[in-house]
Image (cartoon, rainbow, N blue to C red; front, side, top):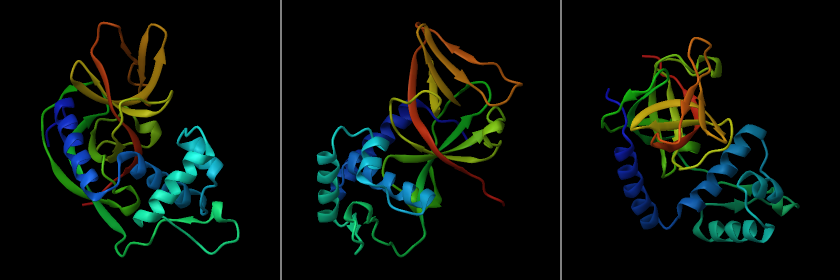
Length: 222
Protein backbone atom coordinates (compact mmCIF):
# COMPACT_ATOMS: atom_id res chain seq x y z
CA UNK A 1 0.00 0.00 0.00
CA UNK A 2 1.47 3.41 -0.93
CA UNK A 3 1.90 6.42 1.36
CA UNK A 4 -0.40 9.42 1.77
CA UNK A 5 0.39 12.90 0.39
CA UNK A 6 -0.82 16.28 1.60
CA UNK A 7 -2.22 16.97 -1.89
CA UNK A 8 -4.28 13.79 -1.74
CA UNK A 9 -5.55 14.71 1.71
CA UNK A 10 -6.64 18.21 0.68
CA UNK A 11 -8.38 16.82 -2.40
CA UNK A 12 -10.19 14.29 -0.22
CA UNK A 13 -11.27 17.02 2.21
CA UNK A 14 -12.66 19.20 -0.59
CA UNK A 15 -14.80 16.34 -1.88
CA UNK A 16 -15.92 15.47 1.67
CA UNK A 17 -17.02 19.06 2.31
CA UNK A 18 -19.12 19.03 -0.85
CA UNK A 19 -20.79 15.74 0.12
CA UNK A 20 -21.40 16.97 3.67
CA UNK A 21 -23.09 20.15 2.48
CA UNK A 22 -25.31 18.11 0.16
CA UNK A 23 -26.45 16.12 3.20
CA UNK A 24 -27.23 19.34 5.06
CA UNK A 25 -24.79 18.95 7.96
CA UNK A 26 -21.77 21.26 8.13
CA UNK A 27 -18.37 19.99 9.34
CA UNK A 28 -18.83 21.89 12.63
CA UNK A 29 -22.20 20.21 13.22
CA UNK A 30 -20.69 16.84 12.37
CA UNK A 31 -17.97 17.46 14.95
CA UNK A 32 -20.61 18.45 17.52
CA UNK A 33 -22.46 15.15 17.01
CA UNK A 34 -19.20 13.20 17.02
CA UNK A 35 -18.15 14.75 20.34
CA UNK A 36 -21.45 13.78 22.00
CA UNK A 37 -21.23 10.23 20.65
CA UNK A 38 -17.61 9.72 21.72
CA UNK A 39 -18.21 11.27 25.17
CA UNK A 40 -21.23 9.02 25.71
CA UNK A 41 -19.30 5.92 24.62
CA UNK A 42 -16.47 6.64 27.07
CA UNK A 43 -18.43 7.97 30.07
CA UNK A 44 -21.65 5.95 29.70
CA UNK A 45 -23.69 9.14 29.94
CA UNK A 46 -24.41 12.15 27.81
CA UNK A 47 -22.30 15.30 28.26
CA UNK A 48 -23.68 18.40 29.94
CA UNK A 49 -23.86 21.64 28.01
CA UNK A 50 -20.87 22.86 30.03
CA UNK A 51 -18.86 19.77 29.07
CA UNK A 52 -19.74 20.28 25.41
CA UNK A 53 -18.73 23.94 25.64
CA UNK A 54 -15.39 23.00 27.22
CA UNK A 55 -14.67 19.99 25.00
CA UNK A 56 -15.37 21.82 21.74
CA UNK A 57 -14.03 25.20 22.96
CA UNK A 58 -17.37 26.92 22.31
CA UNK A 59 -17.55 30.36 23.89
CA UNK A 60 -21.10 30.37 25.25
CA UNK A 61 -23.89 28.08 26.42
CA UNK A 62 -26.19 29.92 24.03
CA UNK A 63 -24.13 28.67 21.09
CA UNK A 64 -24.29 25.11 22.44
CA UNK A 65 -28.07 25.42 22.73
CA UNK A 66 -28.26 26.71 19.14
CA UNK A 67 -26.33 23.70 17.85
CA UNK A 68 -28.57 21.33 19.82
CA UNK A 69 -31.74 22.86 18.38
CA UNK A 70 -30.34 22.82 14.84
CA UNK A 71 -29.31 19.19 15.12
CA UNK A 72 -32.64 18.21 16.65
CA UNK A 73 -34.39 19.81 13.69
CA UNK A 74 -32.15 17.91 11.29
CA UNK A 75 -32.78 14.63 13.13
CA UNK A 76 -29.12 14.08 14.05
CA UNK A 77 -29.75 14.62 17.77
CA UNK A 78 -32.61 14.09 20.21
CA UNK A 79 -33.35 14.35 23.91
CA UNK A 80 -34.56 11.54 26.12
CA UNK A 81 -37.41 11.87 28.58
CA UNK A 82 -35.06 12.54 31.49
CA UNK A 83 -35.95 15.44 33.75
CA UNK A 84 -32.60 17.16 33.23
CA UNK A 85 -32.85 17.96 29.51
CA UNK A 86 -29.31 19.28 29.30
CA UNK A 87 -27.95 15.82 30.20
CA UNK A 88 -30.41 13.90 28.06
CA UNK A 89 -28.85 14.39 24.64
CA UNK A 90 -28.88 11.28 22.49
CA UNK A 91 -27.74 10.31 19.03
CA UNK A 92 -30.66 8.62 17.23
CA UNK A 93 -29.93 4.92 17.00
CA UNK A 94 -28.80 3.72 13.61
CA UNK A 95 -29.59 0.18 12.49
CA UNK A 96 -26.06 -0.91 11.69
CA UNK A 97 -23.16 -0.90 14.15
CA UNK A 98 -20.39 -0.24 11.64
CA UNK A 99 -19.74 2.33 8.96
CA UNK A 100 -16.89 2.97 6.58
CA UNK A 101 -14.22 5.58 6.06
CA UNK A 102 -11.72 6.12 3.26
CA UNK A 103 -8.40 4.36 3.78
CA UNK A 104 -6.06 6.94 2.27
CA UNK A 105 -2.81 4.98 2.52
CA UNK A 106 0.14 4.36 4.82
CA UNK A 107 1.58 6.68 7.46
CA UNK A 108 5.12 6.28 8.78
CA UNK A 109 5.46 5.67 12.51
CA UNK A 110 9.21 5.87 12.31
CA UNK A 111 11.22 8.28 10.22
CA UNK A 112 9.28 10.32 7.64
CA UNK A 113 8.87 8.62 4.29
CA UNK A 114 7.96 10.07 0.93
CA UNK A 115 4.21 9.86 0.42
CA UNK A 116 2.30 8.81 -2.68
CA UNK A 117 -1.39 8.56 -3.49
CA UNK A 118 -3.84 5.75 -2.75
CA UNK A 119 -7.50 5.39 -1.78
CA UNK A 120 -9.67 2.51 -0.56
CA UNK A 121 -12.32 2.14 2.15
CA UNK A 122 -12.44 0.25 5.45
CA UNK A 123 -15.07 -0.60 8.06
CA UNK A 124 -14.93 1.36 11.34
CA UNK A 125 -17.20 1.70 14.39
CA UNK A 126 -20.22 3.74 13.38
CA UNK A 127 -19.50 6.43 15.98
CA UNK A 128 -16.41 7.45 13.96
CA UNK A 129 -17.97 7.27 10.49
CA UNK A 130 -18.40 10.99 9.86
CA UNK A 131 -17.42 13.12 6.87
CA UNK A 132 -13.94 14.55 7.27
CA UNK A 133 -12.61 11.52 9.13
CA UNK A 134 -10.28 9.09 7.38
CA UNK A 135 -8.10 6.07 8.11
CA UNK A 136 -4.36 5.45 7.67
CA UNK A 137 -2.42 2.24 8.14
CA UNK A 138 0.65 2.53 10.36
CA UNK A 139 4.08 1.54 9.08
CA UNK A 140 6.77 1.39 11.75
CA UNK A 141 7.11 1.12 15.52
CA UNK A 142 7.94 4.62 16.77
CA UNK A 143 4.58 4.95 18.59
CA UNK A 144 4.47 1.59 20.36
CA UNK A 145 4.39 3.13 23.86
CA UNK A 146 1.03 4.64 22.86
CA UNK A 147 -0.06 1.12 21.82
CA UNK A 148 0.13 2.04 18.14
CA UNK A 149 1.79 -0.95 16.51
CA UNK A 150 3.17 -1.60 13.05
CA UNK A 151 0.21 -2.61 10.87
CA UNK A 152 -2.44 -0.93 13.05
CA UNK A 153 -5.00 1.49 11.65
CA UNK A 154 -5.56 5.01 12.97
CA UNK A 155 -8.80 6.95 12.60
CA UNK A 156 -7.98 10.60 11.97
CA UNK A 157 -10.11 13.74 12.09
CA UNK A 158 -8.95 16.15 9.40
CA UNK A 159 -7.96 19.52 10.87
CA UNK A 160 -5.11 21.95 10.34
CA UNK A 161 -4.31 22.72 13.99
CA UNK A 162 -3.66 20.65 17.10
CA UNK A 163 -3.15 20.99 20.84
CA UNK A 164 0.07 20.39 22.71
CA UNK A 165 0.71 16.66 23.09
CA UNK A 166 -1.88 15.41 20.62
CA UNK A 167 -0.93 12.66 18.18
CA UNK A 168 -1.07 14.09 14.68
CA UNK A 169 -0.53 13.32 11.03
CA UNK A 170 2.37 15.65 10.23
CA UNK A 171 3.71 16.62 6.81
CA UNK A 172 7.32 17.84 6.83
CA UNK A 173 8.48 18.98 3.40
CA UNK A 174 5.72 16.71 2.00
CA UNK A 175 6.92 13.69 3.96
CA UNK A 176 4.30 12.20 6.27
CA UNK A 177 4.79 10.89 9.81
CA UNK A 178 2.71 10.06 12.87
CA UNK A 179 4.00 11.73 16.04
CA UNK A 180 3.04 13.66 19.15
CA UNK A 181 2.94 17.41 18.57
CA UNK A 182 4.79 19.92 20.77
CA UNK A 183 5.04 23.52 19.51
CA UNK A 184 8.06 25.46 20.79
CA UNK A 185 9.09 29.14 20.57
CA UNK A 186 11.76 28.33 17.97
CA UNK A 187 9.87 25.68 15.99
CA UNK A 188 8.04 22.40 16.50
CA UNK A 189 9.05 19.12 18.10
CA UNK A 190 7.50 15.85 16.95
CA UNK A 191 7.96 13.20 19.61
CA UNK A 192 7.99 9.44 19.02
CA UNK A 193 6.74 7.07 21.70
CA UNK A 194 9.65 4.67 21.44
CA UNK A 195 13.05 5.42 22.99
CA UNK A 196 14.79 3.94 19.95
CA UNK A 197 13.75 6.99 17.91
CA UNK A 198 14.88 10.59 18.17
CA UNK A 199 12.68 13.65 18.45
CA UNK A 200 12.12 15.34 15.08
CA UNK A 201 12.84 19.08 15.16
CA UNK A 202 10.93 21.18 12.63
CA UNK A 203 12.63 24.49 11.93
CA UNK A 204 11.28 27.77 10.63
CA UNK A 205 12.54 27.00 7.13
CA UNK A 206 10.81 23.62 6.94
CA UNK A 207 7.44 23.31 5.25
CA UNK A 208 5.14 21.95 7.95
CA UNK A 209 1.45 21.09 7.80
CA UNK A 210 -0.96 19.21 10.05
CA UNK A 211 -3.18 16.71 8.28
CA UNK A 212 -5.32 15.73 11.24
CA UNK A 213 -5.51 14.50 14.83
CA UNK A 214 -5.73 10.82 15.75
CA UNK A 215 -9.07 9.84 17.32
CA UNK A 216 -8.64 6.08 17.70
CA UNK A 217 -6.48 3.11 16.80
CA UNK A 218 -7.55 -0.41 15.89
CA UNK A 219 -6.04 -3.53 14.41
CA UNK A 220 -7.38 -6.21 12.11
CA UNK A 221 -6.62 -9.89 12.50
CA UNK A 222 -6.45 -11.61 9.15
